[in-house]
Amino acid sequence: MGARILIVEDEEPLTMLLRYNLEAEGYEVDTAARGDDADTRLKEQTPDLVVLDWMLPGLSGIELCRRLRARPETRQLPIIMLTARGEESEKVRGLATGADDYIVKPFSVPELLARVRALLRRANPERVASVLTIGDIELDREKKRVMRSGRPIDLGPTEYRLLEFLMERPGRVFSREQLLDGVWGSDIYIDERTVDVHVGRLRKAINRGNVADPIRTVRGAGYALDDRFGRAN
Ligand code: CA
Image (cartoon, rainbow, N blue to C red; front, top):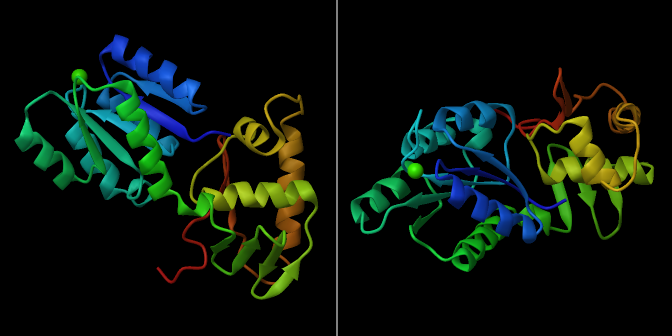
């Protein structure tokens, strides 16, 4: 599954152009035309990156950026800000508010794509790390081995892939459909209840004894691996 990108932009032709090009690169693209709509959506689901326009109806890009940085779930979310030419003071303000990068309109699409790639690489080193660690759970991709508190955990191939998928994206809530796409692949048809069965098996395998369950069931939404699990705070 490609990284998920949310475009927040009220100029529809630009949104369409960006969507087309980002999808051609293999990203999953979602769009919002208003700042307040984007804010609501980002409380429900966190993408891998946001392309955020400065001037938006409902809520400005700068205010949305500030809100995202104030919430733990989106504090690290990569944000590329878009704005009009020649507004250098805005650039300074944009970066001060917490945007990771900044691009001036009109820009070339290849330039934006390059920035997106660079930012995703920088923001998601865990996507390429050979060992993923969250709390007391360690997943070694080279050895295909999972340990919890130093003890080996026996997982079937689907449970292993499911855990790997969730550990790559801690804190993010995935619907059953998204988990099917990401873990099983989107080209095969499997009933969504299959996800519940495998999450159940995964839980049983990793939660032996009196230990905290790192997998969160989000009612009406799906599942997430708790990113704060195992941390002192
Ligand atoms: Ca705008």
